[in-house]
Length: 256
Image 1 (cartoon, one colour):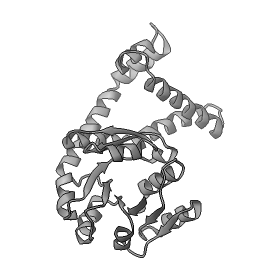
Image 2: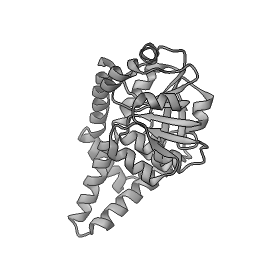
Image 3: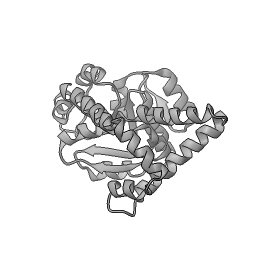
Image 4: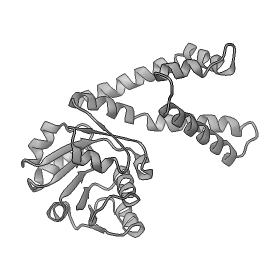
């Protein structure tokens, strides 16, 4: 299996890193010359990685093709590339729908949309895919947790949630900064906050209660600190603003 990546940004770097750290069997990974610094770094770091002279060379040499460019770039370059019917094409492009991809690719190849995120470099995190595909699911299950989407319209909801990364890290940053202002070192503060949220995430993923709402309830005690914090954040409309932000992101995606 030869894997080719068109586009070498953050997501390509994360996916390639995850693949190279996994038990996925492949012959070669070929990267596009775009973003030379990323391509060169990956080539130096891992074996069996080479850099193509151009994007068509990737299609000519590989049987799995990963489209990891922005929607604007994708609209421009995909229609000019010559794909083969035996290609397995994985698109990471947020707003190019399956019908749009089929029209641009022009041949009856196997096409799947996927939404990997940076934690995939650690073989962690969800990877929503559409349409459901056993082969692609088997592949991504080795570097993350595949979620098969049966309705393409629902994929926009997952893309919306992918926008929570920076806001989430900003929460960690704010809380660790609060601790630093009260005497902890940068290392102590950041280690505590990241460990705290990691533990909470693992606890939530292994939730023994019937749902997350129940976990919220069970994490409070009457007149306790968690109850006080939750009431204050609700009074400040913190969670309502999360919903509003998500709706705004979803509206933007629908306009594309």
